[in-house]
Every structure is written in C-alpha cells, then in structure tokens.
Image (cartoon, rainbow over all chains, first blue to last red; front, top):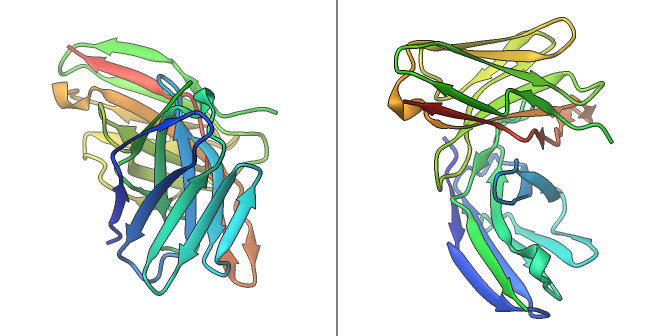
Length: 113
Length: 118
C-alpha cells in the first residue's frame, strides 16, 4: 500500500520568512496530493491540493510542487505569519474512485513574531 | 458555507461499553470517510461510504461498524471499547465527481469527536 513520509517534523521560522515542507510517496499510481492544516482541537482543513497532471499550483502565499518522477511533493508558504502556526499534513491517494487518504506524519510549524 | 457536522464533540465511556458517533456531511456531498487520529499522530483511514454502500475499508477493528443512511449522514458504532480506542474520530465528506474517467474527491473534515475510554 501507499506510504507517505514527511519532513521536517518541526519547523520554526521568523515572521515573514518562507517555510518549506517536503513529502515523498511510494505508490506511483497515486494521483492526488492534498495538504491539510490542523490547529489544536480542530479538524484538518484543506488548504491546497494538486493533481498528478500538473507540476505546480499556487494560491496567494501558498504553493505546492509535484515531481512525479522522484515521487515527491512540497508545500511552500511565503511571508509567514503567526497565524500560520499549526500542524501541516501532506496526503496521497492511490486509487481512482473513492480516494482514501494516506497521510504523512505531520510538520509542526511555529512562526515567531 | 455549511461544514461537516459531527456529534457528540466529546464522549467519555468505560471499557467494554459501546459508543455511537454521528456525521452529517456537507449538503449535496454523497461520500463519507471516517478517520481515527491518536495523540500526536496522523489520521488513519477507517472506512468510507458512497451512496449508502461501503466503498472502501481500512484498518477498522471488527468491533466497529458503520453505515450511511438515505439522507447521507453516517454513524460509526463502536462496541467493547478498549483503552486504545481513545482518540479523535474525524468524518470527512466529498462529492463524487468524475472527469475523463478519473474522479477527484476533495475531502472536507469535520471538527471531530474526542472519545475517551476509561
């Protein structure tokens, strides 16, 4: 089955800096890669996703890149703000149809003012 | 915009008791997924339903069962509770769309039910 690895496990940055979180997946059949932000006591919030037919997607300060050959994808957050502090999860789905998500182990991002 | 609703938000049970968790998907969404998240861990897929039929099954114990009803809400039934069942249980919903033979389902998560087994 699919296995997703995520790095780093923790990331501390100063406000205004950029943050990059990286994930690798094992199943070459995976075709959908969402990113979730989870704040304490809340459910995961979908912040951006990418399909296997594109290499990059951007939404304001957030961007995701996908390298299918290397089987890795990354989340880039620019101009970080304290409210970006949360746990971020990458995920992959290897089935067409009803796509259960396999999550990475999470990255705790701390943005200091 | 309407979100996924889960009830109850918190539940405390004794060992060997039963629990029922409920999930109300976003209006018009026809697919429901259940995930379990232990402390400091990532969500683990349990089971999913599409149009009231089980669509996929993950690492769900035999003590657990689930179903989706005609109004698309879903219930997760947990029996013979064990200490290790203490976790956050999330429901996610999506709308099944198919484009060029491939479906892409954005999953939107609810706020979760925190189950504590004593």
